[in-house]
Image (cartoon, rainbow, N blue to C red):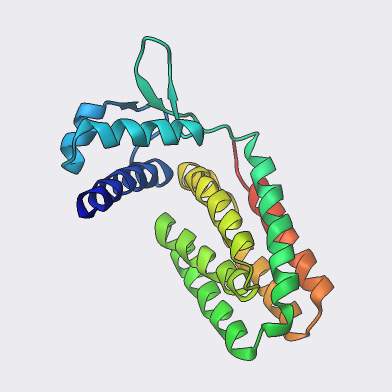
Length: 213
């Protein structure tokens, strides 16, 4: 029984590691994925690597061509708008469910995350900036206490993170999202749910429009 659990652990770890490398750009679009090299890099056999690549292919993160190699999938910028629209719709639902539980402390935490976000954006530190942005939105998403909703939002945002990192240097007016976050905060301070929901949607829509592609 212990060995079975260990094998499952190795498979999951290999999958998560490769997935994270794709999402954060360590493995860029178009890069060839060779199971032997990945197995050596992670210190595992080729079997969990192959299983991980099959899972990642199902998720659309890798692509295997017949009688050819496995590649990291390209980023389809134009279809990404659909992911953005799903996120703002689900975040608005989460905020609606969390609204009554939001306290002054939560708002202060959002303000702190937003200030950190601004600082990292100005420093052009893409990973830390995206982490701060994630922290900002996660405060009210977690307050919804809707674990299924939280899970779906997290999965979609993982895919968007890959897009955001890849196009980070092409984002114009990078500090505007900071101001949009403040609009969400101000609406919450006024206990104006409609204004807060509109501000959340505007933040995500505007974030997408700021990509210079």
